[in-house]
Length: 274
Image (cartoon, rainbow, N blue to C red):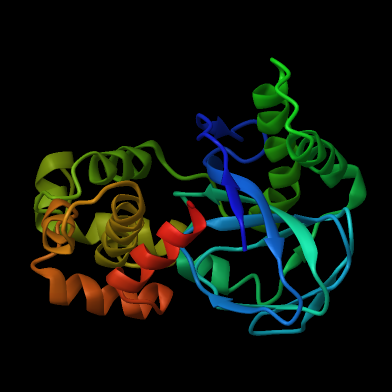
């Protein structure tokens, strides 16, 4: 495989569609996939795929999808996927982070790849094709933002039954994200936000379907994945920077969440970036 990784984009909020739904584009690029290649992975990012040709089979926990050529397919985060290539093909990918949606909420809604309707996916396909042609137009970054926004509007519909997150919950989530190395146990959060531990626990259970501790672990794993692929810091240092007690504990949580050890994740990410 050969990867051409593009620069990061800024945050792309979707607050006009779903008040707390946010999509943050990460890495992207065109990939040459060889015939017979099988790729197994689970990641903290949602993945947007456009294939120049047919021939990719995507297997999740549910039904498999034969990805059509020139159509946008989205693979939700935190789910195990297997890609099989029947023939060589060229393939565009974009990784997107959706921090306000928990792994449990995703798992309760998806068990297979999402084929985006053409009306909402065409702009993304067009921008991908422009990038394949190495077009450097001044508006291409803006167009990618618009394409992600339009595609994620289809995903946001799947979360329409989730009530808008209260301001205090959003403030707590922002506080957690700002200092993952801190003491983020429920009693500490309760003291910081002048409410009872039970109230905080109820907020997370009602709006994210997970406990505060589980949310903190997810956000720490996301940050660890970023540092593993963007820095050369030791795994021990990354574990400490992300608030894990030690490397062994981070490794155990990462294996549980994305089914890969930190060292293996770093090695895979290095391969993608070259």
